Image (cartoon, rainbow, N blue to C red; front, top):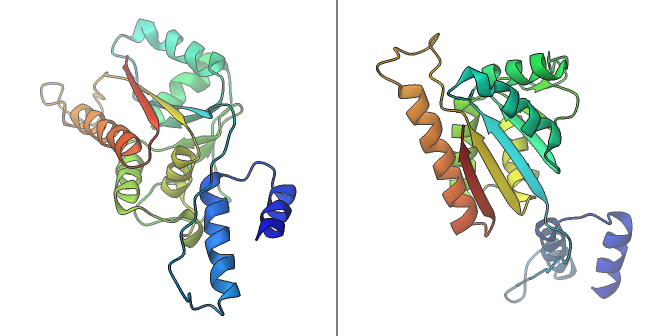
Length: 212
């Protein structure tokens, strides 16, 4: 097994602890003829600098702060994700970056397609995608066993990160909701809180939420 681990790390120097442990368990099963002769337990410890992820969703309450959101997007180190068309359009306009729907992907019945923008690792739709991410995290999904879609990709990025910061805009989308009944706003807030709680309690991540 020692040689197997060394070879995997040589081939994939940045392999995650989760993925390496999965490969080790699979190898142990293979050695046992695909039928474990005893319990198989594997623990992997990965010493490295914390991986950081910024997830931006929703427009700032005050339009004058749109520029602050764009600056945050541009200056934050680590991986960056935008969830929501309005948020993506604000950043695209202020940073002068082209926003394009990704036509290379397969359509998914529950999750709208993602988009591409220079400088960002993923751009998705908002509440539907985040809701699906929360469901996947609650179920304890295995990314390698699922067909890729924006929610699976985002959930995988969350699991591969150590510190996740959510920047949540609090402006009501007048095109979708009566301003007197901000259902969409409450839904987005609650989903993000749910995801943050799951990341900390179930996956031992550090999750921060900043409201804009």
